[in-house]
Length: 327
Image (tube, rainbow, N blue to C red; front, side, top):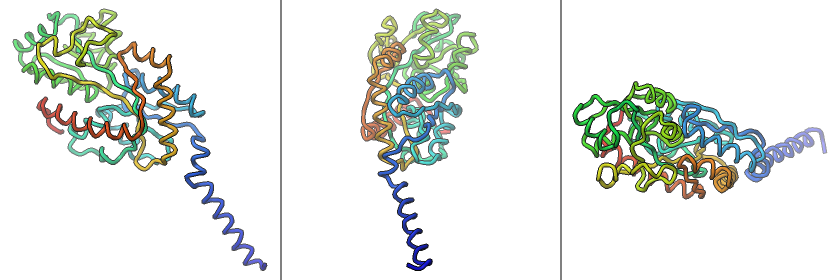
């Protein structure tokens, strides 16, 4: 074999090795080979952050690599979601998504920087939790019905805080169902909104259990109702919105799940899904999160994909019924 033929043969062997090492089978054997970045599209201390960190720690045990939380808050989760949508689809950047980022924003934002229906790979469902309707302690109302009467007597003067789509939509839905007018005040994070509710800068805040429950239990704010169809076993003394107002049909549940950029390798999706399901079945994680009204619900990537379609339609209907328009 002459020098030229030998060189060509070596190049062919090298190319075969390169292709082999980068084939799906080779990736399957080595993934994950480095830390995984999990983007939380809300601020530190938010419910999404608390749930994301709890799952990330457990997922790391299954995957053998750290799952590192990085917060990218702002625009009701849009900033963090957009970052993941445009990240490499290699399994090393995932989104701790919610109903805000993966169901509702499509109906609230006219020009999303990504296509909500096609920009993400469903990975795994974490679970869901209702919200608590709460008011500042100085507001002269002892019940949700009392607050509604106060709002009717003062059209547009009662204010509500929100830092996510679920928080905003739940309050707008409440206003629509109760036929009252309130003024919304936007915040970058739930903890910031809670600080202002405690301080009296806003009158009402409908927020996730992780943010509101400790403050209700400490007596710093007054809980009025929960947004689920049934009372929460965590705080059974609070009625549902339907019970409190004598109505039917009000329900708003926040969900949490993991997504990757579109086109992720199937093996990476399956390994991440297994890690999520293992976390969701972990006794200490379940006990820790259930204390904040969270219910873990393991499932497949395919089931999550179907759920997102249903949730997108559900949130579009809720947003329309609340009289909200895309901005």
